[in-house]
Image (cartoon, rainbow, N blue to C red; front, side, top):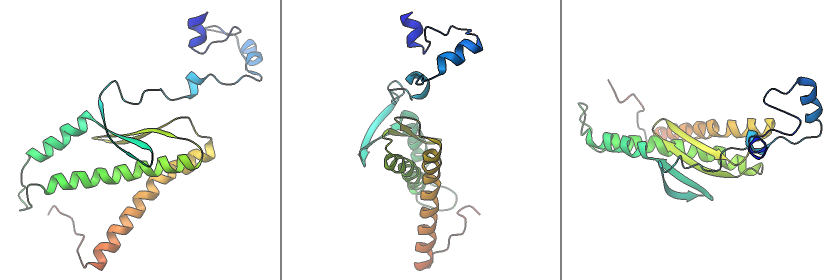
Length: 173
C-alpha cells in the first residue's frame, strides 16, 4: 500500500478503479502533489552549472550551452569581414535576451505568489522552473510576460539604432 500511496493512489482507487467509485473518492479530495507539482530537482542530474542568482532566482546553464559557445568561438571570422569575436558576442547577446525573457516569466510568477526554483539556459532556449502550477488567469499573465519582454527589447534596439543613426539591415547579404 505504501508504494501505491506514493504513486498517488488512494484506498478507494486501484489501477483500474471503476468510474462511480472514483467519482465518490474525488469528492472533497485534494489532488495529490505528485500529479501537480514539478519535480524537486531542477538540475537535470548534474548537467547544469550554477552561474549567478538574479532577483533571488538561481540562473543555471546546461553543459551543452558551453559546448555551443566553444563551437562558435572556434569558428573564427566569417566571409563578411567581421572580427572573430563578433559571432560569439552575437550568441551571448541572444542568450542575454533569452535570460531576460525567462526573468519576465519568473518575476510575474513571483508577483502572483509563485516562486521560481531556477532558470536553465540551453542551446535551444531557456526554462523557468516554477514551484507550482499557476491558476489559469495567473498562467496567462505569466505566459505573456516573456514575449512582452521581447517586444520591449526590440523597441529599445529600434529606438537606440534610430537615435544613433545606425542601419538595422540584415547582416548576411
